[in-house]
Length: 293
Image (cartoon, rainbow, N blue to C red; front, side, top):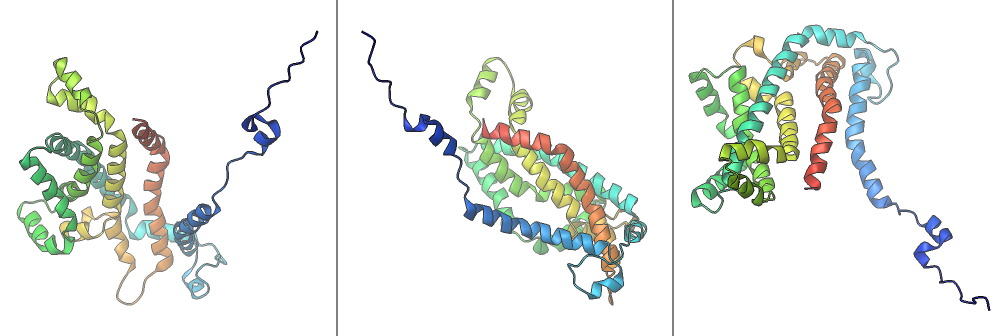
């Protein structure tokens, strides 16, 4: 006789119609919050762009309205008034120098502290560096100006060094927290093979720091590129002024040329934006490696 066994019932998660209806649910509350937060960036950016394309007479109307006549000459005026090529080169030299020295030195200091936190001296150094986060810069501004002048560091090299030193507190906090998650077994295996401390750091630890190096590098780059206070009080030669200092020419006692000033802000923002566009692959790759470690 032919088999009369009934087929096995289809489970709910295997039913075609139900599987077709099963779609990821959208968290509309979270989506709304993200959309609202994105407006805090998009609205000022839109306001900056439309202001940079207006004439001075058009500023009396709605600030968010499109310009009646686009004035591209604002960018040419900003280029001339700020001596943009020279200021751009000064900012680039200071920023690149600060980022490079920060990544090399701060990671070394953090590695020494992270691997010796059981010792009282290194634990005290860690808390000493982190406590610097709570010291406002205006309190130490005048002593810094005096010391940089006496040591001959009131120049671009001294300014880049100050970014390295003042960023040490936050960077030590970030690096040490990340290094604690790196297993010591990797270093012990390397020491078994005869590797020294320097070899272990540069060939094993430093490559594993790519996610944190990307984070520290981006924070240092944005700080050094956009900072106004330190270049103002440290640099003594007007020929070495950075972009934020050069843009101060648009403000005087009586009025401010907002269209030309906003055009210069967009020009100053463009190099950082281009760097991120070309470097985002390595930044995202480093973050993904860190999450899968």
